[in-house]
Image (cartoon, rainbow, N blue to C red; front, side, top):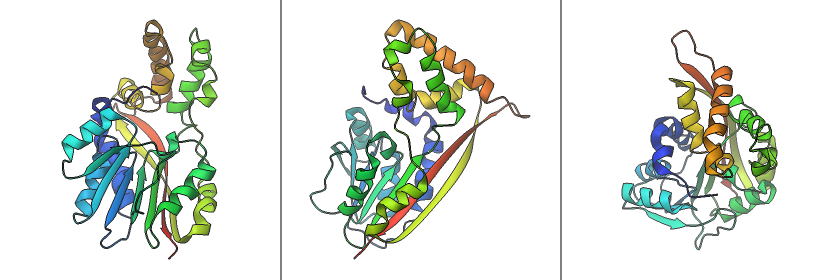
Length: 258
């Protein structure tokens, strides 16, 4: 994919950071020496980690130079490195390996999750939060619009554009052999959004991005408009005029065996 847009991503920073904080709230580590934020983005989740563990060496990893530049400006006391989660290996095993809304972009979860769990220091924690909204109208509409329009050939197989997040029980089974304890849970957020346009702006920074960037410039506006019309119908105004964006997420906090 083309590089990410930190400014667009942070327009809904409070909503994006809430699950990151709730994941962190369920991690029980006293004084980790090394903390790694996999897929750190513009540093909003890294900032939570740095504040929680001021004595730790906190490192953010991301594939986006733009996101890393934004994170470095935000947190000059942390280290931010360019790296691909799919092949990333630490030089020294971290005590906390934290991945907030990043692993859903990486393929082959059946091998990825056990490998990342094995990267954690014995007694350390592997913590993951991933959106599980592929079948919500916000995301199913992307595939439906992509498959039905003059842009269909440019986008290709719409169903394959995004990785399918598996059931939570599958991830439990992937890491259980390496874990001494595992905490797993699901949460469905209902974000209050002022308009259908606001929902479109939210997903343009993430889920809609790989669809739009496959299109020539003269088709992008029409594609987004067709998608906006579906969103407007799928998320009608409530009695106060706001739209409720349903957003399921899955969480895991696993401690590696000693």
